[in-house]
Length: 186
Image 1 (cartoon, helix red, strand yellow):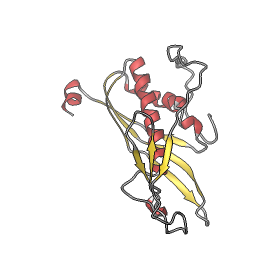
Image 2 (cartoon, one colour):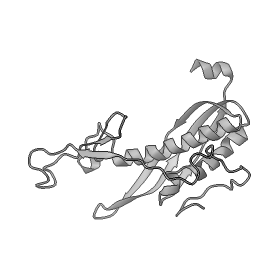
Image 3 (cartoon, rainbow, N blue to C red):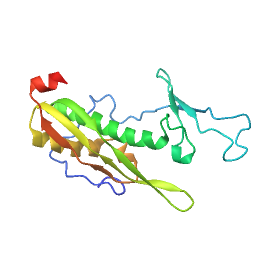
Image 4 (cartoon, helix red, strand yellow):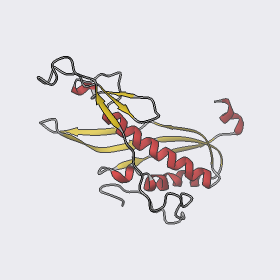
């Protein structure tokens, strides 16, 4: 168990990874600017008087427009914090998984995840995520499908985002073997 409510299979049979020694023992910063864009001329005079729009800005990257969820008067065409949390878990898991496959000779040609999070609200609409489910579908061209499946456990154990949340993240992978011709046709 790593963190509250998070479980995964034993991964001791895989040696510890190093990041070429250059990152070991260091911490990294991730500065982000968030700018509210929802002032409709009267500020937050009342709950209905302001927009929920904002932009996320990171130096050297395109701005990301955001809003609250439509359930909370947000713009449905923009990403909300709940979308971004689920997407962060899914992306972190995938990036670790691809890294592990590359190290172990498994050639991944397709990866798609239909991830979903569950937010539970109480009577006051205070809420919290109670779980996220990752459902990666992976097409491999070369390598052992059983090893490919077990590497999801390792990726989950090493994902920085999954290690940082206080709710369970469940991973239910599907592995299929693709011929080189099939993988190239997609």
